[in-house]
Length: 152
Length: 195
Image 1: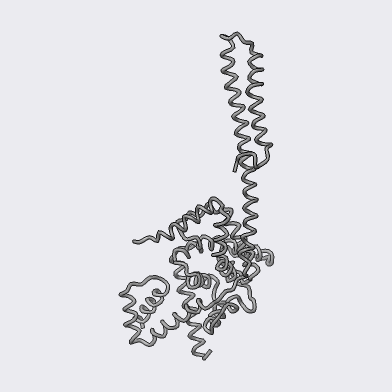
Image 2: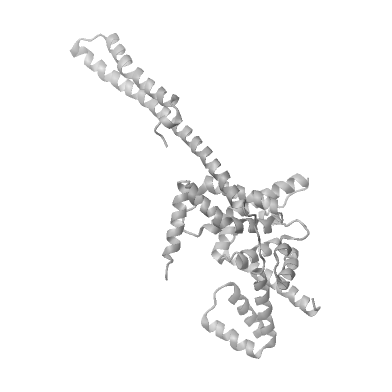
C-alpha cells in the first residue's frame, strides 16, 4: 500500500508538474499490474479533463465596449498629463527667470563702474530687457492652448 | 536551455505598448484576453455582472499602471493578478457593506462564490463529467478551486500561478494536490453510488 501511495504521488505529479521519461515509464509499468493505481490514474485524468469541458460564452460586444472606454480614458489621461507637464514647465521657466535675472543683474552691476552707468539704469535695463520678457514668456506658456504648447 | 524568442519579442512589444499607452495594442489585448479574464472573474465572484465590471476596471488599471509590466513574463498572469486583487477588494467592500461583523484578515478568504442557481460552473458545463465537476467545485474551498482552475483551465504554469496568487510555488502545488484529491474522491463516491 505504501508503494501504491508513492506511485499515486507520482501520478499526481505527472499531471501537475513535469516528470521524467523514466518516471512516466515507471507509472506505465506499474498500472499494468495494479488495478487500484490504474483506477486512480483514470479518475485523475477524468477530473482534469472535466475542467476542459467547461465552455464559457462571453458577451460579443464586451471587448468593444471596454476598448471604447479605454480610448476615452486614455484621452483623459493624456490631457491630464499635458496639463501637469505645462505646470512643471511654467515652474521651471519662472525659476530660471528669477535665477537668470539675479545673475544678469550681478554681472551688469560689475560693469557699472568701468562703463560709468548708474545702478538705477542697470536695474531698468535688466528689468525691461531680461526679467519682463522672461516672465512674459513663462506666462505665455502657461496661458497658451494645449495644442500650441509643443508639449505632447 | 532554449528560449522562445517569439514570445520574448511579443512580451517586449506589449511592455513598450503599455508604456506608451498605445491604444491600438491595448485594444488588441482586450480582444484577445477579455473572454478569459471575464471567465476567471466570473468563477471568482460567481456573478457575470460583477465579472464584467471588474474586467473593465482591470483594463483601466492596465492602462494606468502599464509601465509596471516589465515584459519579462507573459502578460496574462500579470493581468490575472491585477484582476484577482480587484476582485478581492471588491468582495471585501461588499462583505463590509453587508456584514457589520469582523472581516477575515486573510485576503484569500474573500474569494467566496455566492450561491447562485445555476452556478457559473454548471452553466458552463458541456459534459456529464463537467456537470459533476461543477457541482463538486462549488463545495470545494475557494483557494483549491481557484488553484485548479488556473492550472487546468487557464493552463498557467506553477510559476505563473505563484505570480497571480502571490504565494510560493510550494503553496500553489499543495493547493492543487489537495483540490485534486477532494474532487477525485468525490468522483469516486459518485461512481460507487452509480451517479
